[in-house]
Structures are given as C-alpha cells and as structure tokens.
Image (cartoon, rainbow, N blue to C red; front, side, top):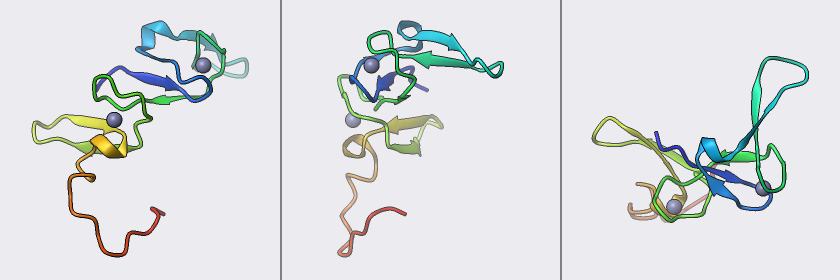
Length: 89
Ligand SMILES: [Zn+2]
Ligand SMILES: [Zn+2]
C-alpha cells in the first residue's frame, strides 16, 4: 500500500507524515487534515509516482499487492473500451 494522500481542496499531495492530525471532538478517531488549508477532505492519491490525481481505481496486482490509482494508471484503462461505456454505478 502506497502512503500517498491528496487534499481535495488545494491538491496538496504527501505521505501521512506530512499531514497534520486532529482529534475527533466527538470520538477517539484521529483525522488527517491538510497542512495547507486545514480541510479533512483528504483521499488516497494515485500511487503512480508523479501522478497528481485521486486514486479512484483500486485493484489487486499480480504480485498480491493492492494498488490505488487514477483511471489512467489503472488496469482498466489498458483494456479495450466496451462499445457502450456507461457511467459506473
Ligand atoms: Zn489542502
Ligand atoms: Zn495516476
């Protein structure tokens, strides 16, 4: 699992260590907040080095690993497109 996160507000990208942590005021959870804009709107980024998109696609690899990438870097993009491509449900 690649340690790479992206802020949905300002597109800041970094590993867990570069994000600030904030305690959930109503529970024991710890939120990651963006060090730049302080939003907790953070999601996993595409694990392809240098890619700055959200990791929308998750899939297992041949080596038993699990990847999270944008569509462009996923295994789905390299497959022939179906004739009737609909939006994912
Ligand atoms: Zn941010
Ligand atoms: Zn990507």
